[in-house]
Length: 129
Picture 1: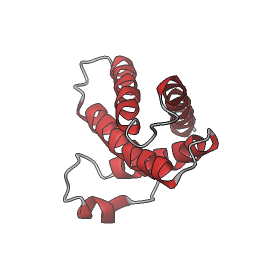
Picture 2: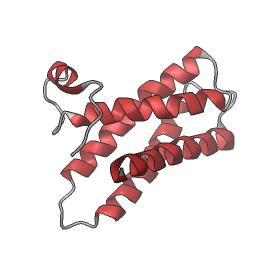
Picture 3: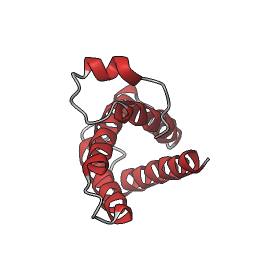
Picture 4: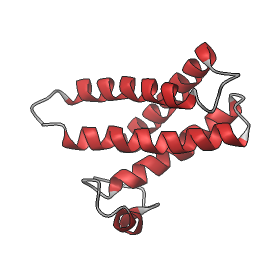
């Protein structure tokens, strides 16, 4: 599997080998780097908002990719990805609600759908090239 060598083995060692694959940290950071500027451009410019989003994004991405890495090959992979993305959006919405009190609600949900859709498409393009 191709990875973006951003964090790689050093961060994996620092994480104590908690995750099944070292590339999970690379993918999480790459996703946060894609999604956080979109979140910021959508009006969430207070440091507390976008920093919280960055952290929540890394956590949710690690959880999603660990889930996908451990999903049995007998389970339809597309269904696992769809289920995982739905759970990620809901988790991010619940956790971002703490930092984004005044601009939450439907607007926050739409922005989270947008950020996740953009990174999802970027991931598809990356893995197809």
